[in-house]
Image 1: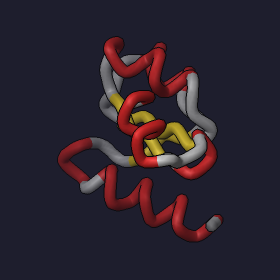
Image 2: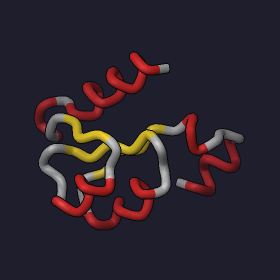
Image 3: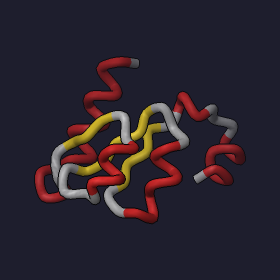
Image 4: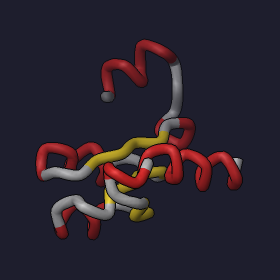
Length: 71
């Protein structure tokens, strides 16, 4: 994620990240707009700034809509 972010010239405040498993933990901890899926691992949910609906309930769409409301 960092390489993509830097190559596109975005700051960490301009990026929303989503995750659900332990491999996402470092990413979620490093971004202000971090979202965990409701069906995700407990440690992942604890690291995220927001918990959205699960994967089967359009959680990413719901989470993005919440971020777009604050921008």
